[in-house]
Image 1: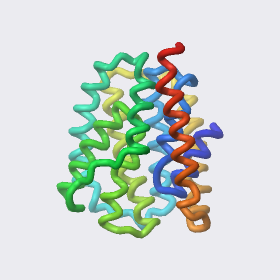
Image 2: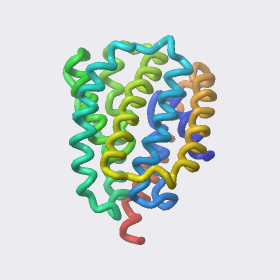
Image 3: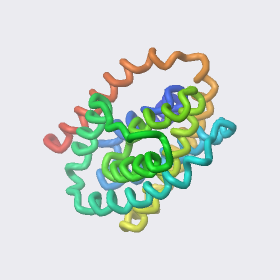
Image 4: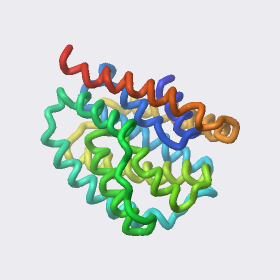
Length: 232
């Protein structure tokens, strides 16, 4: 629970990164088949609460186009996830985390409705496999409005939609959420409190102070994930 709280507070301050840090810490604590579904539920609570605590900055006009692309992405990503060898899933997630952390993400041309649809498609499709993909859309949203609170809140909005659709996809794929409800509800409570704390700290903490530390920490955790299948 402390990890869920801290990563949610971090995301509320920085606008991204909390989900990636959380999923990098989960392998070894949960069986591979539960990691991404449980993470998706926790991040739905984190992102929805972050958007709700600063709802005045929400730009509802981004929702329809993003949702259209996200539905298509959830379907395709679900097909790929269903074919994965789950014992290697932590290593797959670790490699994708390193790519998202250190390799410049593809730029979606423009900032209009088509760009939002494309963002929804690859954000949700990749999220079905990697779990944490929040940084992928930051540059597109910043082209629409570079103001920090607007970017943080609307990143939370589209990621909440992303996680909700992925949860629906995992349910259709047959994942049983029943045994995990106590853990998911406890983690949801922790991330909601983290969102509340981080929202109030955001204006006081310069984002640049976190960037190098975050990248170093998430890289160490990702390398741990990549090594896990070889030592299990």
